[in-house]
Length: 310
Image 1: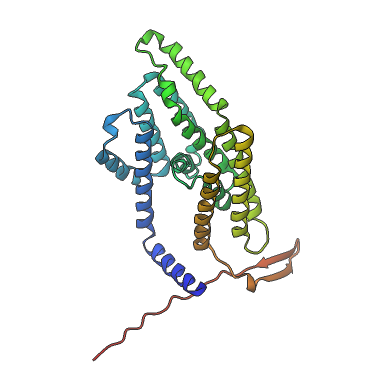
Image 2: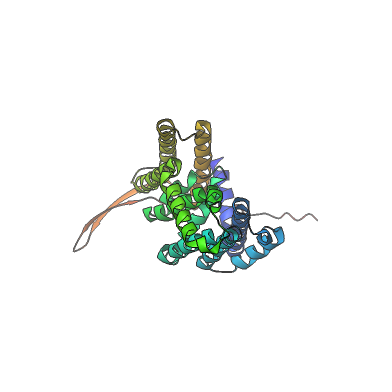
């Protein structure tokens, strides 16, 4: 059974490497299309941007652009949506997004995808996998974009209450902008569920990063299981103590589903043979080295035999 799985894995990896550019381009297109669809569901004030053909055309164009430009244009689209409902709110959101872009995203464009993925995955059942994925394959610096993504998600949920402060009188614009700014600050710092989620996700990222770097057998899979359990425990504790109104059953099965997906991802990324572990010692003029070497499992794909029938 394991040999068959390894053969399937090897075949899929071969095909992925052969068509890597096309596959990644297609996945990028799907991701952008999903983000635009989610954006229209959450905001949807600009009817011209809510059309399916417009979203497909935008997705095609954005797929061809570098990552940081994709994020920049998506920020413009968010601001455009809000501008159709309130110029004041659009000004505030636009300034905040521009500041976020130049302070962080332009310097770390790949990390910016976490900002996009978090609000998108909140509506799915895979959100609890984000901090574990970040800790396994990246560094704790991903806490920053994940935090921004969480804030954007909860901000989108409260955007209607902010836009209601809109006034048609241009003379009142400064006072309206100030009122909206205060409402945004209150929303960010008074939402216990959002603040608790940020804290838990930060803990999970750090715990995943530390545990996954330990020198123990099957460390990646142990890490996924351990931090998934930690995630469940922390959210249940927060739900009981802070009255967050979260579904305990939802927390458990979403964490299990995310862990299952992450195990599959790790299986395809790297699988090693712990039975053939070697410990090597050697020295040079400056250091004495203790090295633990674990070979990766590699299996040759079965050759196809063609039988000619005469």
